[in-house]
Every structure is written in structure tokens, then in C-alpha cells.
Image (cartoon, rainbow, N blue to C red; front, side, top):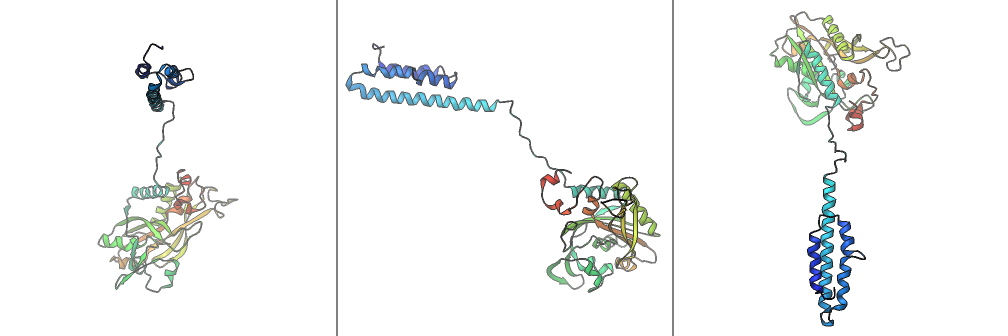
Length: 343
Ligand code: PHE
């Protein structure tokens, strides 16, 4: 070795390692830079170098060592990357897939049930004039019946004829609007589904909720048509054997008026030892025969035509479904994915 030019030997090492770069980085490190590695051999030659060249030789050695180290480090990171790229045993990344919100699913189902028997799905403003929400529905200004609807008023200039602007408290605002849309010409078979708003919030009430409203107007429409429609809905939505029941009630816009109950699917309507319903029935909403004053407000002659209407909350209707055990409807709007993913 002493015969050879030490600087040339240094350079040879760099050429040699270039030809071995297909090997494992760790084994190259041992071979070149290890305790008994090639670099050590070359650097030992420093003792043969004449004194005045020692400094230059030392610098050359340092550079060589750095170059070797860099090459091995590059190789190492390259090998790590390729390893990551081709590791077929790693589990794939799953994309989250969403679905339609349960209340939207319920709205779709309810609409289809009524569309099957000739109802026409419509939507009317969810922020509307006092006129459509109350006045045209036989509730003159300042009438105490309005108190039942805990109304949010919109802070805008009232209209001289239409009155104040309100957040719709029920979907009944669609009744006279639908009569107007059809130029007061029955037959009318409307299913109006929309958001509604009331000043309320507890386990069974949210400030924003949805209602659906049915309205049928034609010659000779009577309570039997209403009852038949309710029974049809009960069986279609809750399953065969579910019954409907109507009880006398009071609304200004229907006469006579009823509250509507559906039989409980847990106890089959018997109420015996049932913790879900107590009486065998669940109250869901209101209904009745359209008041003559409402027909008149929609330009329809009450001496020729009669009609029925019904309306109630989508959320409540939905939570009574078989197999759902939801005791707090606020959960629907909580944004809680663990809850929503169940539907
Ligand atoms: N709008 C009434 C409510 O929100 C329900 C109803 C609709 C009653 C149609 C009679 C007829 O309580």
C-alpha cells in the first residue's frame, strides 16, 4: 500500500462505492466507514505522507469522508421511501361516506306516501306574512287563539295589507297560498312540507322543526275522506294494523276540528303495561274540515266546495316509528355523527 499514491486511493474509494449503490445502505456504511472499514485503511496511510503534504492530505480525507457519508445517507432515505411506497400489506385509507339526514329521509318517505294517492308536493315561504300564517286562517289581528303559536316576528316594516312578517309557526300558511296558486279552482290535493319555528325548546320541542300539511278541497269532501286518508297514512308509515283516531278539538281554521292520534306499535293500541304510550295511542297533530272563512279567503265558494286539512311535525311523527327509541328530538340537530350514522 505504501507504494501507492494515497490521494489516488481516496478517489478510488468514491468510484468504488458508486458501483455498489444497489446494496443495502447499512452494509455499505459498515464496509466503508466502519471500525475496520476501507476509509480507516486509507486514512492510516497518512503516516507515509511527507510532512509538508500532510495538511492537504488530511483535508482531502475529510472531504472524502463527507462525500461517502452523504452518499450513504441519500441511499438510506431512498430505500426508506421505496419501502413505504410498495408496502402492499398496509391497510387502505377509507373515505368517509355520508348519507341523507334522517329527517330528510322521513320527509321523502312522507311525501311519497301522499304522492301515491294523488297529492301534489309543494313548498311555500318559511318566512311569510302574518296574513297567510294567521289572518287568512280566520284569526283576525289580536285574536287570542294566536297565542297558541309562540311566534318569532321578523324585525321589518309591516305591510299595510299583509301585516308583519313572521317565521312560519305552521305549514298552514300554505293553505290559502295553494288556493291562490290554483286560481281558486279545485280540486286541490296538496302536501306542503316545510320548516316551521316556535319559541320553544325541550326534549320534545326544537325552535326549528318540520311540519307537513295536507289540504284537499273538492265537491262533496267530508270527514270520512279525512279519516280514510289518516288510516292510509298510519298503515303506510308505521306498518299494517296501525290505526288512527280523531278527537274533538278547536282550531280557528277548521270546523269541526280534531286532534289526531295513532295507535301505539309497542302494545298494539291496548295501553296495557306500556311504558311507551300509557294509553295505547300517540297524539301527533291537528286536523279538521276547512273553515268556510278560509275557503272564502282563498276565493273558493264554501256553498259549492268543502275540504279537509291536517298538519303536524315530521320529527315527532318519525320518532314514533317502530324500532326507533329516540326520546330527545334535539339530537337530530346536534350534529352528533355517532347518533346520525345509525340511520
Ligand atoms: N296548523 C296546526 C298546528 O300547527 C295543525 C292543523 C293543520 C290543524 C291543519 C288543522 C288543520 O297545530
